[in-house]
Length: 231
Ligand SMILES: NC(=O)c1ccc[n+]([C@@H]2O[C@H](COP(=O)([O-])OP(=O)(O)OC[C@H]3O[C@@H](n4cnc5c(N)ncnc54)[C@H](OP(=O)(O)O)[C@@H]3O)[C@@H](O)[C@H]2O)c1
Image (cartoon, rainbow, N blue to C red; front, side, top):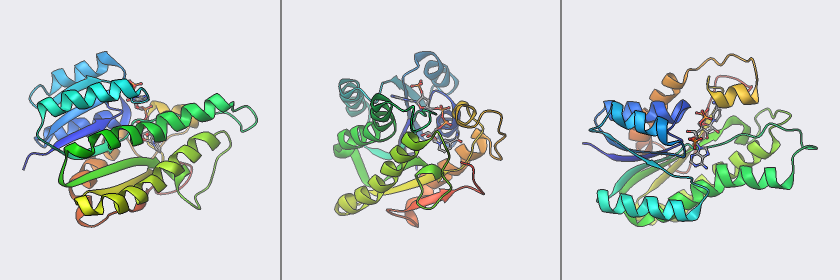
């Protein structure tokens, strides 16, 4: 059965691959990010299955407008993949309070915001997938320069457990995937020169499979998706 999926952070990297995979399996995808041109290109590649909507998820008014559009186009939403994220690589000493606020806005509050506004639209058995990081997984190796990023992802991981509890009565599942290194622009920024063992296509396939089938087996789980550190 064709599902309606919202994928954030869809303009490049992992999110873009997830959109393509879902579209190729004939699901309806709403691709969300700020950059208009790559989103339009993605929509043009899959005009029957991908609808793109440029939105800055840190701006409440933009998210409200996105929800209005979704309400007029779809009867319900089956999958939300909170994949949008940003990374500031600075030592703890150099990080400003504005850097901390910005990381929380990009990686945690934006997911809170869209999830909250989507609540009335979620179908029975909807699945929320929060794309966290091994940096946000308790007990994993931590890396210099990634304190604000890792803490924001840790918040997203714990949010997942809270959502699963609060939404249980609505039959909505929530899981977090704590990704290891994937070869994208973000990885290059975090660990310049490093070669990741996983491509965005491979991770896109894993996330797509998990989004479609994972809620049969997991709810409220924070799952590491990594062979080894660094991630
Ligand atoms: N790559 C890795 O090794 C790795 C490891 C662990 C976790 N992750 C996580 O996986 C997710 C995807 O990462 P990636 O490597 O594919 O990163 P990426 O290539 O840098 O892509 C990030 C995406 O998020 C979007 N985005 C950022 N801020 C946004 C905002 N305010 N509103 C809307 N969209 C926004 C960006 O689009 P615009 O700039 O067009 O808005 C872009 O599409 C992230 O959450 C990241 O933290 C990645």
